[in-house]
Structures are given as C-alpha cells and as structure tokens.
Image (cartoon, one colour):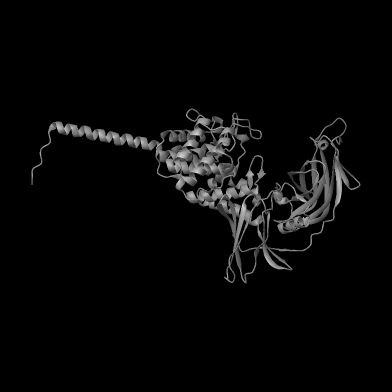
Length: 553
C-alpha cells in the first residue's frame, strides 16, 4: 500500500481555517433559518383542524382584495389571503397580498393592526385579537416557502403585541386567577370591565395562537395558549345559559344566532383535533346537543303517508333562519331501503318539506350537516324523531288590554307618544312606552313551542316582548314590527333570559318603545296562534302566504 504523504504544518493550518469557516457558515445558516423556519407547516394541518378558517364569511370570497384594503379591514384582508393561499399554494400571489397588507398598516414600523373605520360604538382605530393572530399564520407559511425573513420578523412582532393586555395595545387580558381571555374588540382607553367576552372571537384567536406556538416553538405563544385555555375552562359554564341555548357573549348577555352556534361547534371540534383535550370535545357536544334539541328532525304523518321534516327556522330566533345550507342523510339500519339524501339552500328554502321519504321497514338513523363554501360540518346524528301531524291550526282566542301610550279603539290600537302617564311634574319610563297585553288560555312551554302573532302597522315600531304566567315574567328585546305589511311575530321562550322560570304562558305583553316616535302609529292584532313545533310554523306560513315572517331574511 502506498504510504500517505505527511501533511505539512502549513496545510494543517489551512484545513483548520477552512473547517472554522465552514462551521461559521453552518452556524450562520442555522441562525438565519431559525428566524424564519419552523417545524410544522400550519397549512398542512387537516381540514378538520383548520375548518374555522375554511368556514369563512362569503364576504371574504366575493369582495375584491383591493376593496378590502381600501376599507381598512385587517381581518377580512388576512382571511382573504389565508383562504387563497390555502387553496392554491401560490406563494407569488400570496406575497403580493401580504406586501399590500404590510404597506397598508405600515407593519415594518407599527406593531399592530387597527381598523380604519368605526364599528357600532367603536371609533376608527379599534383592534381585534382575531387578525392579530391570523395574519402571522399566513406570514410564517409563505415566509418559509419564499425564505422571506421580513415576514417572520413581522409575524413575531404581531404575536408579541397580541399577547399583551388591551390596556397596552394588545388583545389578551392577563390572568387574574381565572385565566386569560382574547379580546375580539379592543380600543384605546379600554378597561377590563368593558370587555364583551365574545366566545367565537376568543376561540378563533386561541386556535391561531396554539398553531403559532406549535409551529414556531414560540414561548410567548405557548404561554398565551395555556393561559387562554385556563380562561376558556373558567368561563365555559357562563356561556351555557342554564342549559338553554348558549350565549354569544356575556356583557351584555346575548344569545347566539344559529350560525354562530354552529361556528362555535366547529371551533371546539378543531381545537380538539389539534390538541386532543377532552374539554374541547365536551364543549363541542354541548353545542351539538343544543342544535339537536332545538333543530330536530320531525316524523310527520298525514293522509299521504309518512315523511321526515327539517326546518332551518327555530328557537331561539324564529325570525332569523340559519344562514348556512344543510344536508341531511338518512340510512335504514335494517337495510330494507336505500340511503336518502336532501340538500337545502338556506337563502331559498327555510324548510325541507317532505325532504326524506320514510320508506324504511325498521329503524332509521339521520345525520344533519351544515354546508358552506364547499365545506361540510356534521351538526348531529340521531335516531330520535319528533312526531308531528297535519292537523289544522286555529287561532287562539285572546283578549287585549292597552296601557300608557297605547289605546284601543274599535279593534284598532293607536300608539300616541304624546301621552304622559306619570304624575304631574314627574317623568318616567312609562311616558315612553305603550303596552299591549294579550291574555289567553295557558299554553305549555316546550323546547320547540312558539307563539305566533299576526300584526299590521302603518309605522315601524321597536318592541320588547314579555311572557307572563302566575306573577312570573321573562322579557327580551325583539326585532321591530315593520310598517305597511302584515307581520308574523314568532316568539320562542328559549330566547329569554331566565327562560326556566316559566313552564307555561298565559299572557304576552308587547311593549312599544315610543321615545323616538314623532307621530301617532296605528296597528292591529289580527290573530294569535299557539305552535307546538316548527312543523306548525311551516303550516302557518304555507297557509298564509301573504304573511311576512318578521326579519326572516
């Protein structure tokens, strides 16, 4: 074997220098990669984990990006880019969108996103945890693919700001013993006692911060998630509303519209998929149970036979139908008939009449799905169906009393805001309201029962509604009575605070709020109906095609 040539001292020195140079280069590359690389690509998570982002408002898909930017809406802008990039993985297009956002909000200098328009009582310049945690998800994903260090720098800056208190310009209320809470609406000068505590906004940000914590191994994000989880667990029971329909937010207490309850179920399901924490599964089941309870499938029998019925209208807002499409799939457990399927469009079909023919010779199992923008979510599965019939609906006999600014004359009711009912020299609330009390034979209050009142008015009138039985009463604000049409006022006790106080109702008071009324209004109560369930409501609307369900669309 040929002997190896000895290495000279000079060559050894050169090798040592080269080795040190190589190690330095490796260290530098590692350092640079650590600033924009991460171990988990959030965009590669399962659709179940990311469904809250996929289940986005149609506005994010219909509005041109330029209009969103011009308006100055950081959530719509961030969500728009997220959805586009998730679906087409086009880094060049996503980078153009992200650069527009960075320029619009000057994110190379600023540390948070603000809204460039006022919203309700919030002046321009308010901010939200939702976009402060969503935009970093897109920045780190696109930044990884394009080796754009600027994107990660901005993402980390937004995360650091988002997990500060709203008092410091952030979006996370710190732990005071009951965990942390992400604020959907924050503004300059805000204090904690002004927090709305909106569940879906908190969950949205909690999901985002968890994904960021896992992807970046970011200590601030990890701590924020753990504290946010603690806060969610501490506050969860407050949203369940004594076992009735869950609340949308706590201050002021506001019940969920159906589509937001579905969105919460999606969010809890996603968090369970990401974390495996059984707490999230239980909260998702609470929402599913409410949907199954108040939006059940009916088994209807009439002279034509037997069929299944499902309605997108129901408690607690009978006037506000679920905005998402539905799909119902039923299977015959004894396999004596084929699978049945129906898809209904929420905008065009509030009811699924004769949707599923019940031709099975044994037990059936049905699953109800919500569908939106090509994404599907299972609401619940059931083998229990509520019986309904085609019996004729008759008006419920009732008497009418009027009080304060309301006066009855020859069957008509005149609302006169000039009436003063307080003692002379005094002013009170009774000077700014007219009351119409409808009394009738007591009616049982069940999960699906409703009262429907046909009203015609020549003026749009804001109202409150009160259910009364044996000196107990529950009250809630309601949608206004519209003018120049016969409106069908449909009421469910489920939407009331302290709904469990009453098991029956024997009178209903409609309170007309007259403080802003500038002239007399004329109205008439035409008929009153006691509805056992949503199928009764369907029959009433079908028989009275000229009637308008109040605020249904």
